[in-house]
Image (tube, rainbow, N blue to C red; front, side, top):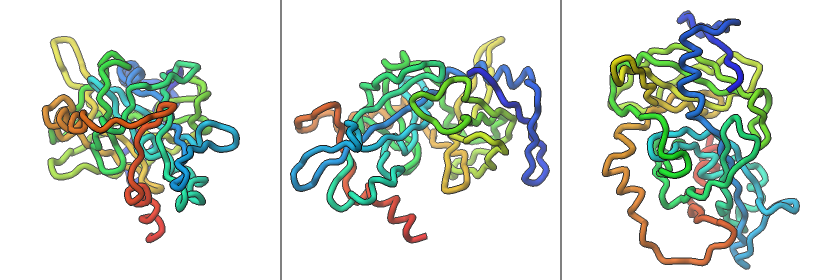
Length: 294
């Protein structure tokens, strides 16, 4: 990450004031987390329910694609709903909803400092674990990032942490240069409750596009050593934002491991061009139906 936009937060009602300098603490946070967030893209195709043919759009193999943030965690990564169900974030899908079903096609990723996307061969919907309904997911993957990532903290309590927003100059794409991506970093205290997973947070005041973010807490892991635990993931909900704390148990726990293996043995089917299974129509349409009722 090439730059940090520093934030000093005064807890006056709804007021956040930007600073024009880097504090040593903000520099420390940036150094600790900068390799833990990356860009994910998800392509999808449409399958004709009558002919079983697959279609892209406008001469491309894919019908549409989305871009979102990925977060490295131990032995895998977390990602958001635009990667799980990209068609819900593509207005072009609506007119084909009755005659076609969406099909996950290719998943790619890149570090903020990379120039090219790399195919993410490990992405498999059957192994995905939903951590927060229709919002945050976990993909076990000890290979892509060598199993390295944030340690997640599932414990409730008062967290003396840091909010890290990710913003870009315009929009997130496959060619977004690293110098157009920035962090907005400031301190925040959050009382994480055992019976709550969602906490409202005000979006930062900025002329850039807010993509998402994380909430981390530094803890002393050894003498002379701080570890930044991942407490929450910052996600949009309409025009509002929330800190979600979906890590109610360690991602390496037996119950999470069982969830990723329950469909290990399944009937084989022919797959072409890296296509993955798609959700059933009822769940595919759920989010759109909710929007119509509002």
